Image (cartoon, rainbow, N blue to C red; front, side, top):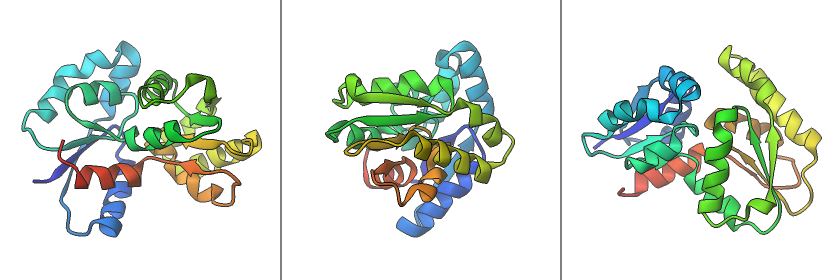
Amino acid sequence: MALTLLHTAAVHVATFDALRDRIAPGSELRHVVRPDWLDRARADGAEAVRDDLRAVLADGGRVLCTCTTLGPLAAELGALRVDAPMMRAAARSAGPVVMAYALESTVAPSRDLFVAEGGDVARLKMLDLTRFWPLFVAGETGAFHAAVAGAVRDHAPPAGSVVVLAQVSMAGAADHLRDLAVPVLSSPETALKVALGAAF
């Protein structure tokens, strides 16, 4: 059975198809793209799309939700959260965790997941990069990733820390940070590996 990926931005389809071709050729992915769900969740709360999410999950197949804002509700309904494996790794790290985010509605879901995975909230330093979100919305993903990476670099994460790129949309910034002295965690590849290998 195909793995269904629930996206709130169409650009993520190519990202996950490319990852699939590299790590699990031949695996079948089904993409559901609903940017309007993110708009509604930001305006009225995630509960506003509960019935729509439930309908996607109704066939009993595997679903990976790639939207951080909708992640808690999707997980409650039986989907895998794209940020869960990444946040588990961050929670198990020993030092400070710099959590970069570009959308305010992802702050609480990301922080709560970190704590749920056993992380100490006192270790979290939230890095607000919401000023760059309009670049992503405008389709300027290259500029968005470069801006995110530049801001992370300017923040100068301390030795022994871990940087978390909280949203799938930010993952491309990791390519600009390969020389950073601390680990940079992003969610797509790890989550897809888990989703394709797990029964949930």
